Length: 507
Image (cartoon, rainbow, N blue to C red; front, side):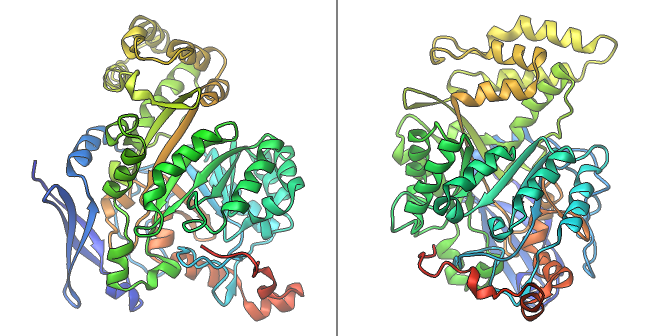
């Protein structure tokens, strides 16, 4: 299959020179790979690979789900003209940046945390405003929140922020951290649990000292989090030539620690922030493609996990729709573009991973739900429930299903007890493996951007995370709503350099 698709992007050189110019772009297949070509009248043509396995891409596009326009997501920022007409995905996850300070200086930091001349760290009353903005969005407020930075644990009032988010109605609250403070202070993990934090997203770039200089800190943090009863998702930043070859081993590490680790969310490097200074050659050498990622996993788990076990993240929309129909709990709908990333669920039994699509008939389930959602009329929920019970056996291959797995029980729990209980039971034996390609000025495409489901709450409104990073909006926001380093140090009586853990090697 050789297709061409017209989209739009920006000129990366214009961006480096301080302006954002929208230009036409074409997505086309070459030698089994998908490339984006674009031309700027001032700086010439650019060509960037966007997906290294065209066959996988086309399979994922079968699960392409487009949402309705969402007026509360910004498409115009500062003096930048609107890059697309309207945003087409609701907020699945809100990012709240509570500081741009950091205790490390990682070479690939997309936020360039701690390394600018401005400190962005809103006081509590302004944090409350940002949280309210996310919760009062139309047609309904954001339910999931990730507190991030910088390094959020540098804030002395972090637990007050968590408590504030809970009071405002966020049902799932995550903390994204490098884990240094959690490794150094075992009581900190206990306090996170006591303050009802849902999940810790822990930076974790490899299983060896060469790929992950923080590995011993990671292990110590995990030990403290496990004792505290917290759940953890590992967050590796993948870089070709550095750690992509350990992607499979990171999954194996998660399986071996599945009493505390409930998922791995890979984030291939995006060339923003500090990494935005990479040369063309460095970018080509370090860019990680889906094929690189899949090859590493298939090498580590031959015959056990393959690229065929991964589906685009939009597949979860069908599960969300099932839960919403059966339980009445409103779900945001994961309508991200299939090219944004993929997911697989592993059922872990006695240390052995079994991808759930090996015993769940995914396409049969998707076809069933699509037909059900087209039906209209009274008593829709009851008719849906009756049809679901009638077809339940067709969703599961009982011969290949691991002992103890019962999909019908999961659906019943979701309907009768509620989503949260059902998902807790589901996650008890499962490990979620996902990855998401955040965009940068070289590979930014508007048909993906307008479907972004991860949004930042900012003083300029709600905006897609890829706009926040790829368009350099975070730097403008931090400067506009922050303090210069000198002003911050005078105001707080602290020295910014004292944040740095100089004895800890940086990735």
